[in-house]
Image 1 (cartoon, rainbow, N blue to C red):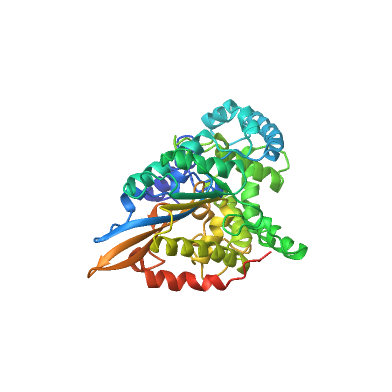
Image 2 (cartoon, rainbow, N blue to C red):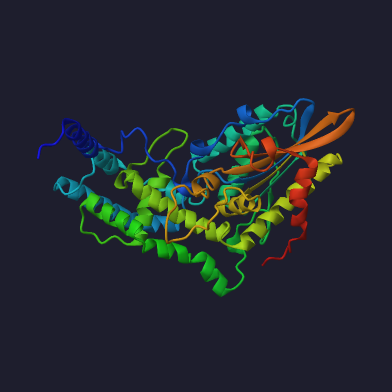
Length: 428
């Protein structure tokens, strides 16, 4: 039976596209890499998106931010050695004609070198991360020039006691042109900035939340096993991949991305777009149960952090507040605060049984490098009487889901946050 001409053309085009697909010139590489997603992939621009209300002026800003791009922990260096062994096997497989990786992708992978600076500066910001924070500080000052000029003694910054968060705060302050910068470092169990792993309740609960039962379930799902098999066949090597091997290769893929330079990682060529979506979902599950809606205590921790926002703006209304109050923390705390505000909540919980491609909870958006939530308090004059409203921003875009049109009256703002004052502070 002869094929119709249109069918033949369709099959020909599909085969041509499929056989000639190469990561290095794909044009649209998958950029959503969970907590390693470059900030430039998901951010807006506060200079363009800030909501200006006639008759109102900003009098105080409160924000909580994740650190910007950082070097991996020291432990990651040990995993790289095994990854380099896999790279040699991939190149050998290509030379033998057993790999479907493209020539240029193989060349880029071969040319990749382990820079000692990755190990020497473990857990500190990369140069890109520093520049990212400086530029954000500049954009914020440009959006609110009157409020954020001459900030000496009119600001309050606090960070977790980590190099990457402290460096993020310093770079952000540099962008805001703060001289003689003074940073407060938090102590243990600081509910505003400390991520939940500093507050484990008991062994059973720790195993439930931090060993991620749903992740184990998903790694046994047909979708994950198909991705694992696809990777094995794509690389054409007999090396028996473990889940940890795959995670290390994914880490190298994610770390190698440059958001500012729009430069892709050669390690990502090992994966298809479908593979990257599968690996992203594993991270979504980790964050969902570790610091999101999967555990009600995560929401309570986020609520406690938001009571500081209420206190800060009440002080500003009384004329004793700061022009800007900012906290620098980890991805987990950002997730908690966003969960407390019911952002990106799905109707059904995320599970390891099935990946919903249309889910709202996405760690690539909520937990990206430099992910942030800011609120701006505006003072207005209505019929010669003072009035106040609050605008929320997530990653420099207005949060229209919090209040109508993205602007909360003071009463709406107070009604949302006042109940949080009743949450027990000692969750540990």
